[in-house]
Image: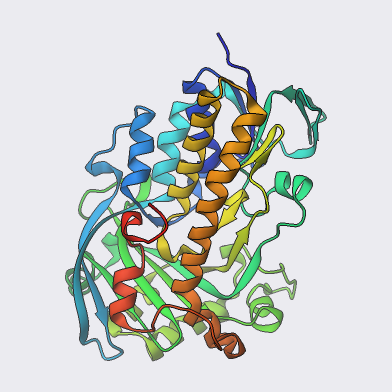
Length: 409
C-alpha cells in the first residue's frame, strides 16, 4: 500500500537518494530531470565519507573495493618538487558517475522522466501541483526540490536564497592512468598530492577510470586547482569563447579558448612542482568551475522540501557535497516515517535538523577556503576567521572525516 505520492525535481545524486529511500518506505515516487542525456557522462572525482556508504548500504547497494580508489598518504610538494610534508590519512576517492550509476540502477525507468523541466509549483495545502515544460501537470502529496545550485524549485519557492560567488574558481581535469609516464606514475598515482602556492590550493588524487574501472592501469588521476579570480573581469573573460560570446560565469569545456588552456598550463609550470605541472600538461581538456556557496532560508514547509545543493552548497574543500545530499534524503525519509506520513509535520522537523547541519557545513568550508577568497579580496581578511595557510592545516582539514569536525556530529 502506497504511503502517498512524491514528485522529486532533479534526477542527479540528491534526487536519486531521495527517490530510492522514499520508494523503500512505500511512497509512489516520480523523478523529473530537465536534462535529457545520460547524466553519467558528467561529473568528476569526489571524496567520500563513511556516512555516504552507510546510506548506500541502507538501499541495498554493495559497497566494496570497486566503489573507488583507496589512498593512504598525503604529500605536499614545494615548487621545486621537494617534499614539504607527508601525513597518513586513509580515504576512498571515487567519481560522481560511479555513485550516480549505482543509484540510477535502483530506480525503475518508469519512475524517471528525463528532458522535462519544472515550470511552476503551487502548494494547495492538502497537495502540491507542478506544471512542466512538456505541458503536463502532476499533483502529489509532496514535492522535493533536488535540482542543484540553480534550483528552479528554490527560485520559485524561496527566491531570497541565491548562490554567492566565493571569489575563486577551480580548474579541474582527469588524466588517464595509461597516459602517465612511468616516473610520473610512480611518484603520484598512489598518493593524494597537494601544491600550495601563496593564496591557492592544488589537489591531485586517483579516481576510478572510464566505466568506473578501478583496476591498476585503468584508473584516472584527478586534479582540482583553486585560484582567486575576479568575477567582473577575469572570470567573464575566461568564459568567453573564440567567437567573442561570453557565457556568463560558466562555459562548456569544449568552448574554452585554446589560449586559455595554454595559459593555465604555463601557470602550472611557473607555480607548481614539476610532477604536478605535468599532470596539468598531460590532461586532454582542463576545465573550470566558479566556486559558490549557498544557504537557504528554509528547507521544508507545507508540502515542499529542498535537499542537497538545492538547499545548501558548501565549497568543495570538505568533500561533503554528495554525503550531505545523502544525509538530507535519509533524514527526510525518516521524518516522514516517524510522523506516519504527515508531510507538514515531517517537513517542520526536517527543516530544523538539516538547516542547522547545512549552515555548519557551509561555515566550515568557508573557513577552509577563506585564505583563497581573501587573496583576491584582501579587504575581507580583517577580523575574519580562516584556516591557517600552512601545509599542516591543509593536509589535515581538506576532506577531513565528518566525525572529526566540530559541530557535524
